[in-house]
Figure 1 (cartoon, rainbow, N blue to C red):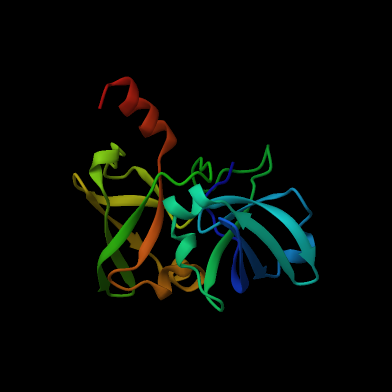
Figure 2: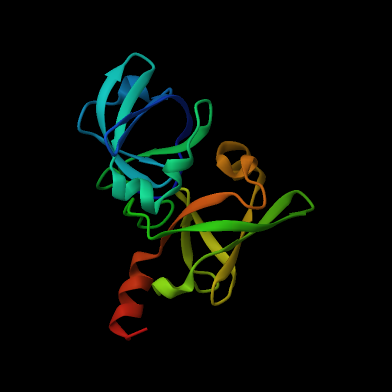
Length: 194
């Protein structure tokens, strides 16, 4: 479980394909604190640490993960949002995040608003994932509040701190992002038959 509060950005050092798996080596200040078998969210995707070497560590993404997330678009030198698993008994500063991506979305509009930004994303509504205004959404692992909600689109407002300390400063119209919809909302929608 995660909170959606990004701890730091990591930098992709290597991408090694082995069969249908992708081994991802990341440079991060967190590396010296990690251990093998630990869960870390990468752009919101929960992956297991399989090796640690100084300032770098390695995780492996399987074919299903690569098909359903934006990890298949990573490039060496690219930044990724990182968050270690939450500690039971700590404050839940974001919202309950599982690290299981529901689907991808595409950035359709970026609007600067006097010191902050509004980002709009579109997604395939056929998967039945709901958003509601003032509800929670996770974009590339970042816990956010929905500003506007439509049948296949939503917007979020980004403050300067979030813009500077997450991948949001690298997004452009057309950027593909990982979306994890609010787990409580998903259960309610399923129970209501929507």
